[in-house]
Length: 158
Image (cartoon, one colour):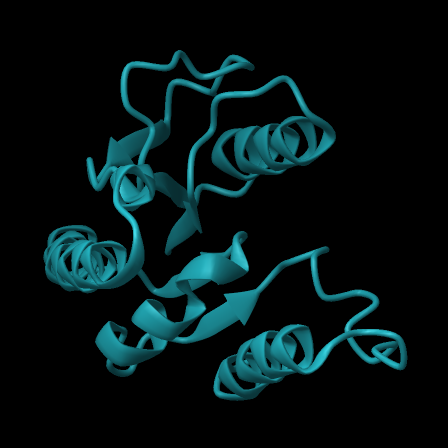
């Protein structure tokens, strides 16, 4: 069985990175699963914690932060270009790895994963929406943003 974990970058010495490393290393060492860590924009950053020799790391090389060099409509156009590139590279990575299960660790990519995953089961493992239902003091734009994520999460399998 092949598990594919998807996140933006694996470059800081944080709690999520430590927990994810421990889980991937344990599964690779004790379950016999093939584990792949797919990052979207790792760049030249080193992985913060050592990965088991059987955990494979792939990076899509989509530098999403490039859009912030622009303003207004140019930023929007650059965003669309980068999202199109992300979708193309994500689809190619899924075809290459052919995972049995996708685990989305970063909600920023759930929309793209829902579009390209075909019949691959998708599990959402995120801590960023734990307070999403408590929006009584949020503005309409924030509510719309969270609603969009919640709608995408509902399309996942777990």
